[in-house]
Length: 281
Ligand code: SF4
Image (cartoon, rainbow, N blue to C red):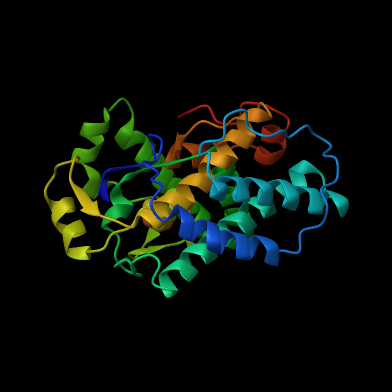
């Protein structure tokens, strides 16, 4: 498949169905390996999204995994607010394992992405609120005071450089706008990076370099459909789950989401109560 560079995840991901049968095969195996307990009635009426993003078996597996993991945590006395971020991380790791196994088994081609290559980290990254909350929690436990000062400076700079500009105007100054989490060519939140950063990939680092240097926001590179499919589905389902609970769910620019999160005294609590934590898309 071809994947446009420049704007990570602003639009629905171009999810494809190719590899769906292989994904279902592996997804099922891992699903049963979870030894999932019977689902207890939820404190909140989570409900199934009225219109799942994909009417596929794989989408159903991921949805049921989310639901049952929430049920498991609730059976241990954890409320929704306490359980949702660990469940989100566990499901992301589940999705990551599926991709790793597909590529190891030759069911999906490997990609060229590796540590130190960061052309795509100059794109405009879009995330959903639950991802922002997970990243924020990670920052509060793992970042030093100095890292947080540097991060806040980067967020202020990004907000100031992008304010009032169109996508193409921002794209034209992408050299000046590395991701606020990019540090010496590496992602400083790698284990908690957004699903779109896991989804975006390339078969050829040289093509990424050429696309980056072309100054054409419509440039595209060849990329793995399986990664796009798995992480796109995962993100879509958490977005729909949030929406079904009347919680903020729409996509946000990463630096704006971080600004709102880091300036809230209790972003997760407010979000889980249905408050508007995120004011800037
Ligand atoms: S979050 Fe990490 S992987 Fe994603 S764009 Fe930023 S630095 Fe790159």
